[in-house]
Image (cartoon, rainbow, N blue to C red):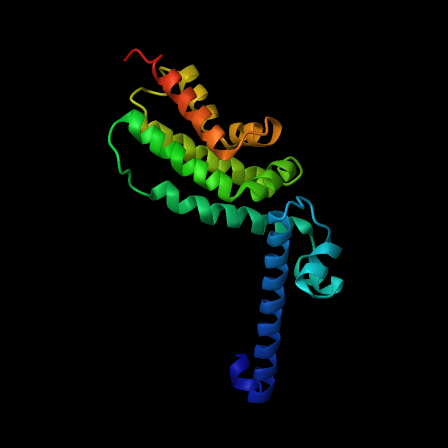
Length: 202
């Protein structure tokens, strides 16, 4: 083993290098996420290096492909979504829980808006982001299935309509393309949900 043959002073050097490596890596990740949050949806390696106050070669050594940084972005999004996915409901009944779900989503969508815009932009060229999105869509579908008072297979159109109404794609369409503010988006989704639920004849 290394610890049996390497002098302590050399081990200290290795530990120091590891700390510097970890430190520079985190600086790069933080700088990249900061640039995204500022609205730069596709920062270059040069821009990341400048924001992180590290050399360009350091960026390339730590992240040989920018794809690896987009993975960090996906993980940041996941870390915000994951706790909400397992949080118990405060309300009872399908309609109340759907509105509670919408309120949670609206808060997250707005908090992560710059990251979500960047994710949408890159998902067609990043296999990781594509797979990550598919993973979370599957989870969100399971959450919906646990709330709705009908079988998804028996009401596929209604299920899809509710799913789309609650989706990040709908939020981005209203926020970016329609230029609605967060409250207007939330109110529109609430109205749409109520209208869709009124179609259920169960």
